Image (cartoon, rainbow, N blue to C red):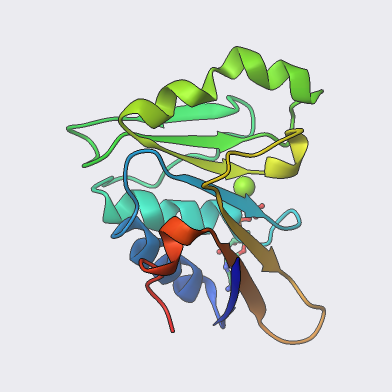
Length: 151
Ligand SMILES: Nc1ncnc2c1ncn2[C@@H]1O[C@H](COP(=O)(O)OP(=O)(O)O)[C@@H](O)[C@H]1O
Ligand SMILES: [Mg+2]
């Protein structure tokens, strides 16, 4: 497992990082995005969705928990998931998240609400220090090592 770090000086950098990831994401991928409220998880996901062809600004799935996107709106089916309001890990069963992975990818905010994660998960964490810029830390599973689009 390799760890990488990226500085996100402003909101545009977060969106750009999402776009770079959107360019390499493929069916079967799981991107887990952790970090405090307001860290930039939805902003990064919007970058992924924009790169894959979404023209409008994606709403946050905080209430819906899952917002699915599919072709022709997007090049690749993506389920944008926000588990902040998931009451217990067992409730995730009903969301049927595995179904997304047949032909698409999952981007999951608040993945720590689940009791487990898929082994191929790309784990991203955005930290929000009191002083200084936000920082993206990535734990790359083997299938991501060759695709990581940053230095
Ligand atoms: N790197 C950054 N530096 C400063 N502000 C940022 C950065 N990335 C995102 N933001 C801003 O932070 C706010 C919260 O972002 P959001 O994506 O909704 O957070 P989350 O989904 O993690 O709760 C937004 O106003 C966004 O523009
Ligand atoms: Mg969010």
